[in-house]
Image 1 (cartoon, rainbow, N blue to C red):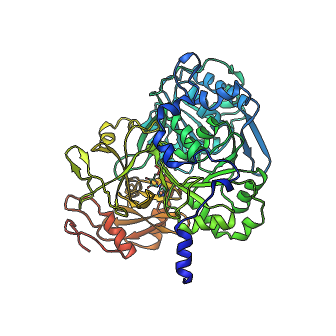
Image 2 (tube, rainbow, N blue to C red):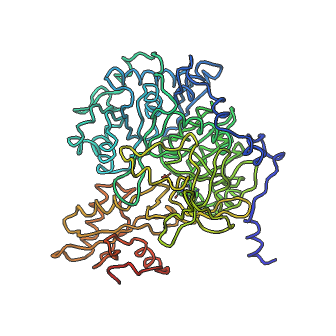
Image 3 (cartoon, protein in one colour):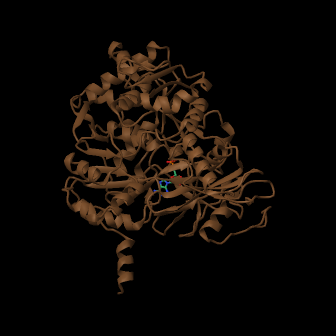
Length: 601
Ligand code: AMP
């Protein structure tokens, strides 16, 4: 056997023996569990509001534990910049979140009202999410690396009535656009220290005066709990609506895909501004009554290894970008730490390179388990599991209760129908659009105020995810690429339209197109192509000026990293920019069908 085939055989599967695992997995027999699982049965594992008053995520996550033997258990353990920690028990979290609900109520913020956050991983964020649920209001997290424009747009689209943020973020990103947000009545500063900015409130002072009691509002399973903005290829960001019943899926996926056990110390590294940060950074671990680690700082290889070691993390949920950064920093760094408490590592957000799965085995002593889901699915749908073999490079298999399929697409990328049903790809290793049978509890229930956009996601009995994938003969799914032009950078979706619209606000820009280009750490970064208005000359000064302009408006996480001037952007005859073609040219790939291109090269 040559070295090459030997290493590819090693990569084909990573086999496991349940008897050799340190904790008996929650899911041992995949086929048998899939055959008997039902969402109704999963609902029975939850408590429901006392007196049969409905279902509320905060009750399942916190108050249920606070009322029982878990009351004094650490719910959240925050790691400060200097490595010291401070914790909130389940009882303390129940009390603080009730206080926050009282603050909202006192200000007249009620059922269905949207409460936004623009803040890092600090205790107030967790208190606010849970308190908002308790008040029957709707929580909507924003990414703190957004610039003022994405912040303004989402607050406006979501009709935000309240916002939890810090003084610095308020000054930089909200104050400049506040005048255009008349619906935003209350801004809570977590660090006002008795001296709030004009037009803001001191959250700590309000919390001190608010009663820590009051019944949790009776919310029904189908009532809106969360709003998560996500980006599409065209138009404004979409506000995906999630309901309180989603907690059933957070519970079941925490059980099966993350293998959470009551004694776990669990660490989810996701930013709270994105769906993973809520579904798996707040809800799933608390529902399982585990201790969740929260790092208040940003990624740093030594710091992260220190946290894994010192906090004795047992289950770690992170992202490919972060793992690639750790891998780049060298395996010896990991070897310097005692990671023996760690028993399960999972990753989500982008394709996970097989090399990273295998690196995990060498550096962490465990392979990394890739799983797949998206904002619209609200929870993990496809996963490599603790008890079953891993196929490095594959996203794994659908979880119990999830029916996945691959819908055939015609030459124009549209789903093929046979009568009313979508035609499924049945041949192994053949590309189709990844689709899910509607009906799982954390499925989005709409895009806010965009009925038609929501309806278009469902075709021939399936929810179409926009991702292209293959399935092998054993039912493992393999990611192929996005079926649209959306860009994934450091695990975050970026809508090209949003970037282009911002660029076009610069006085020199006539037209712009944004694509994702490969980057070894971020997966992709944004590259923009810009056509200038007459009278403007391309040059390095203008290039940097336009990039700076975009960074200021969009924030560094969204703005283009590269910018190239062009004299004609390729378009379809109907005038749509052909980003696909720009990308093929950029990467030296075949250009495909160019028969509809209006402006050839
Ligand atoms: P978001 O809605 O921001 O969570 O992004 C969801 C998108 O991220 C999916 O539709 C995929 O394109 C991508 N994605 C998520 N997880 C994976 C994965 N494990 N492998 C490949 N792509 C992924």
